[in-house]
Image (tube, rainbow, N blue to C red; front, side):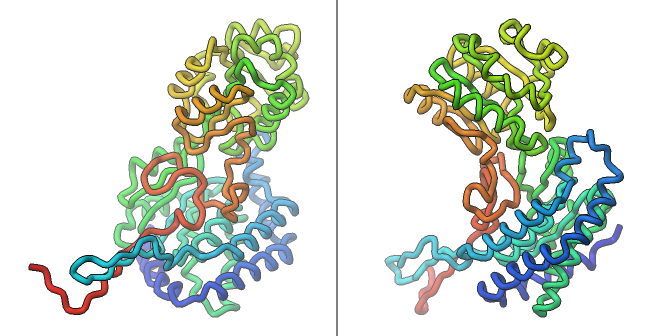
Length: 415
């Protein structure tokens, strides 16, 4: 597929964005929020066409589904982003050299941001809102599973852009077929950065095949460690929330690590999970602790394959450890560096865990379900970066900027 002209339009549109005031951009986002609420029946009808092509048993089904409450949440995020201060033109550093040159380091847009995503239609709006707020053009490549939903949403974006006399090429939705992905990965000179959102296989493919710089938003292989001092009431609630709030998202719990002294409390800690039909893959010690206490049809011996996996389903593995060090070692071996948590009342254990675990978000006594741009006060998110270059964790407005140096002289020459 030849998308050369499309990418040229995207590159050209960056200049028109630079002319928009922050007040104008905020107004566009509020208008889009109102449009989504007004057209929610249309959006849900188009989304239903996508849902009919996917089995409800597919873990991606929940991500794909759009409801009135989810549209309301998206609209709320749009309004929240509209209220945030723009990071653009912020002076990060200013100094005058001994020779009189004045230097300023200013925040500027990345330029053209390409985002490749799967069955997550909300990403269409999230990416647009964060990109226009930071002066970036959004080139969106959604999956075929969500094609009707994405087309519906981008049509409303373009409707609002047209009403405000803004170049519609600041938000481009590419065709859903694979050839468009290949074209985007090779759009050197037109696209400044590509951000993949989705499965481990998608992210791996983009990383290995893109000629354009990539910011990885990694899969979540998430652990929670219950140490010997953990409060079992708090722990029970946190474990249940982290696992079952939304199993199809990357911050959901995959592996529960339990100190051997807490095995006696394991039936209590896991009791609510049975009401959600969570399948547990337990190692030998935890299996013995749960046998005759957890429903037999939901309890299975763990195999090596059940550790280091992002389930995205009502499934959970359990690992028993002798001490904090063993828990840290297990996490270091299997973590995807997304979100990790400790449940503990021991300050020394908490501090050691928080300082030694290498992940984008590290928690003490809270659910990993909070790893989310909106929850972190970023308005929305472009994705959750698990790498260390440029951005890490939920990516909001600042993470969609770079910087440039402004140097003002009075005639200086270098000798």
